[in-house]
Image (tube, rainbow, N blue to C red; front, side, top):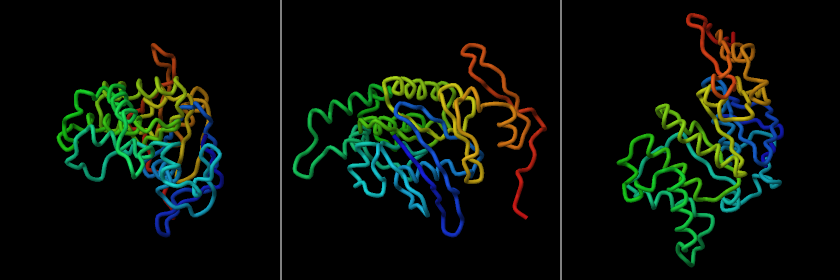
Length: 265
């Protein structure tokens, strides 16, 4: 589904990703983790096609990303940002309907099929009751679910999310990731940058860790989510233990154990 070879990206003269190689297969649910500023968002921006590459190549479903037109990309992949740069005075239904962009031609408006997709997406995200509200009147959690609804309305096989549950309470986080896991079980490929380590371990079968712009760890959650790995990557003593219900690995920080991250020079 996604194949990344030798990917390097930069912001001005500062290199943000260094020679990343990554293969995400159809039907996987992958969590992208790492310290703040490690390159998680940069990787998703590169895969989504919104950030130019310094070097390397990205393929989506066998197609070279740089050769795809916007509508062609939008049929393969939908993206959910961490937050909107600006929240417009737009009705929720209209905002979610924007996800139907790749299927609407210049000569005709939205079809009953488009309306069905919007209704389905609103139902899936438990936002149908918000359909007549305006986006700038929503809480952060409500708006985040609406943005996910917009992505689902695209009906794509691939979904990219950048901190989709950031800033939400525990119940809202569980609601969003329960939904994502259900969609994944139905066959959707999901790649999600996640700040919450335990949330990632609970829901993702595979985790990749980025540190200082380099992919340093990649594998099944049960194998890579260890005390040794987490303590090394996050420069702190982190203890790992099994979840009492699911037995998936979870972690806690040992107070007073954090060390300053190494700096250049």
